[in-house]
Image (cartoon, rainbow, N blue to C red; front, side, top):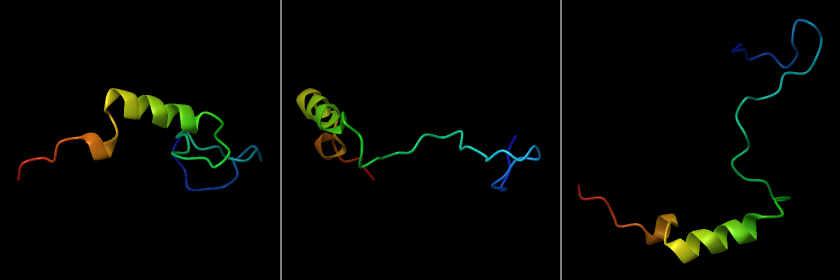
Length: 51
C-alpha cells in the first residue's frame, strides 16, 4: 500500500519498501567499490554517451 503517513492504521510505524542507497555503517562498501573498480563498472569508468 502506498501512503505518505508515518503510522499504519493499526498503529505500527510504516517502513519504506525501498532500501537506502547508501549507509555510512555499511561494512562491505569498501569491498563493493574494489570489485566495481576491478571490473570497470564504476560510473567514472563508463564511456560518455554521445549526444
